[in-house]
Amino acid sequence: MSETIIKLEHVTKSYGSHNVLTDVNMQVNKGDIYGLIGKNGAGKTTIFKMILGLSEKNSGTVSIDGSKNNRELMANRNKIGFLVGTKFYGYLNAKNNLKYFATIKGIPSKQINAEIERVLEIVGLKGVKTPFKGFSLGMQQRLGIANAILGNPELLILDEPTNGLDPQGIADVRNMIKRFREEFGMTVIVSSHILGELEHTADRFGFINEGTVLREITLDDLKEKQPAVEIAVDDLEKAKKVLSENGIKILREVEEKSSLEDFYFNLIGGKANE
Image (cartoon, rainbow, N blue to C red; front, top):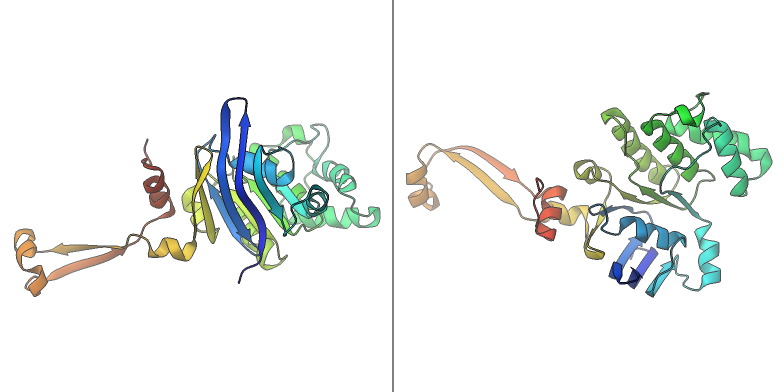
C-alpha cells in the first residue's frame, strides 16, 4: 500500500462570500509525480499555498506526512521545496540570489557554494552572470526551480514550471522532474496548462474545477478510459449491414484511447476549443 505524504480532507476556503475551495479531498502518495489540472482560478495555487501554510483553511484537514497539528505541520513544511511564482532580487545574478535563499533555508555555510553550483547545473543556469532583471521568463522559471530544489527537499511543489519556456525548455523541465524523483527521491506535485506534456510527465492526476477536486486517477486509469476503434472499409453501407459477419475487407484499424485533455474536458463538461 502506498504511503500518503499529502492529504486534504473536506477542505474549504473562502474570502468573504467568495468560495475558492469547496470540500476538497486530495491525496498525494510518496514517490508520486502528481499533476494537478484545472483552469486559471480553479483553485490550484490556493491548494499549494494551503499545503505550504501560506493560506489558512476555513474548515477541513490538511496533513503532511501524517501530521495534522500546527507544530508538526511546521516541521514537515521544512521538507518542502516550492515554485509558486518567481520573486528574486533584480540586481543580483542567479548565484547570489540563491545564496540569500540558501541562508534563509538553513543550509550550512560550508555547503552553500557547492549546493548552488549543483542546482544551477541541473536547471541549465550554471555560469550565467546576468542580473535577474535581465532574465527571460524562461530563465526566471529555471531559477525558481533551482531555488525550489535547494537542500534536496522530500516534496517538491511546482506551479506552472513550464510557463514561458520554448519546446526544448519544456522537454528539459519534464526530464528534470523525472530526475528529481528517480535520482533524488522526491515526490513532486506539478500544475501545467500543457496537458499533453503533463501526460508524459506525471503518473497520477487530480482534476480541479471551480474549487472542487472532481477526480483523481492514475496514468494507467487514463490509458484504460474510453477505448475506441476506427475502421476504414471499402463499402460503408455494406459494412453497416454485415460487419459482424466479416464480409467486409478491413483496410485499416486504429485503436485510440482517451488523452488527458479529452478526459479533462469530458469531466468538466467543456471543450478544448472553448
